[in-house]
Image (cartoon, rainbow, N blue to C red):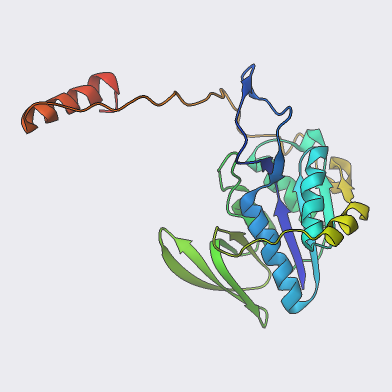
Length: 255
């Protein structure tokens, strides 16, 4: 079975976000595999252990993303691919178009992605990728079974469970609860550090950077306002309701 995982490197969720000149400061920050993508890597390795085959992990990002790729290799993936070309960095539209070009360089039966990235939370790239490849997509899966060219997936459906069946090739996105990602072994880490990575540029992929440029623009990045203490409304119930409506309308401006 040929398995592809599309992975993103993100901030460690424990890191403190610091803004400098309107941009997120990356100096000294720890980067990790996007947690949802880590579930996808683990599930891909489990599928390989069950059915045999090859796990290829693809990432689009700067050279620092190599560390995340090598972590995936240390977990048990077979091949790492990095698209380290600044002309191909953009938004979700860009990422999906570039990943589609990269994925088509390899044979695949199933593609696994994280449900979303913890840094932007858009949840768009995987859906766009499936559409571009012309294959079915099953999102937010918490259980996956593959047999006889078919897949059965349990997916998180707003607190309930939906069971979906499909045929290969298919793209699925991993939700928390799908599995418990393994820790890379020391031997795995040593082997991963010796493996060479496949590198793609726009020319290698035959992608026109201008044609896949971002369709959206970040206008402003800012931190949320510090939380303040709550207010206790006093008086009888009717007075409390009047004061609440007044505050929501004139102070919070949500009515």
